[in-house]
Image 1 (cartoon, one colour):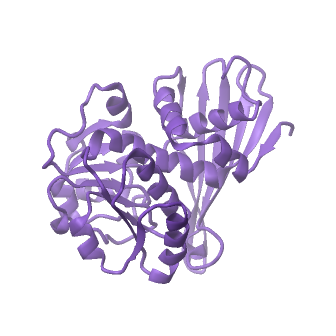
Image 2 (image 1 turned 180 degrees about the horizontal axis):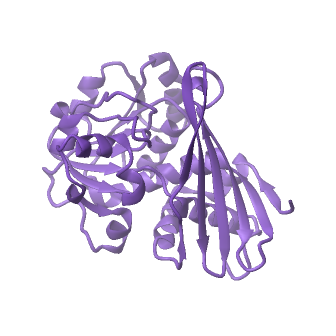
Length: 320
């Protein structure tokens, strides 16, 4: 295999938040395809089944990319992340490998950028109090992406173990953000303008009864049918949007309430493409509760990978 190897530092250098959001938005209208992801169950480790995900995407006459992801929940509470990934970028006209890209940072950055891009249409304009739920790789990136879009007066970080939230808060405070560890989740939910959840939860922890009018809820972490971050009251209270219908409708936060008859497929108002194109306006009033369910999509990975490749001079011919 030939091609450059671009590590996490190279990804961070290329992916400033606004350019990354803009690249993902532009990629939604590009000529190409992103077949359904392949998800394969892995043999259990310490009694917990993992998953192998393959996520291909291409742009006609330009580039082909594929991300390979492992999800091993048995890594939770250890120094090893539960999600690990690698990305390969090819020239679409020759099939030559252009680059291998460190996939964990690519994934967390594009995921956070998707959330912040959606929040442009779905969060209130005066959003200033943001709560991030989760303490994994994704949590600080969600905080940074949302903070890049608005001036924050408060940034809470909650995890089941407060000691895991503390180093994230320390890092965010060192960057000038008004971060603090949250120990009372219910109180934080009741006072937040925007709640961004990036966990591997299998049981809901976000209670819809606590949401105040005008809250925007961003559900990112639980991507499979057996995973769920929000309860039935969130399902009832919110006006729902998704990154892509194909992926998000399979995730537990939507699949469970739809399966129970609390929601229908038609209750999903619009996807990210419609929000970006302006064919759906998103939020309709300051009192509305909006919910964005993101399961990740391969086209966003390719947009991010092309941004990284272009920055480092290894993009396919004709792409800049």
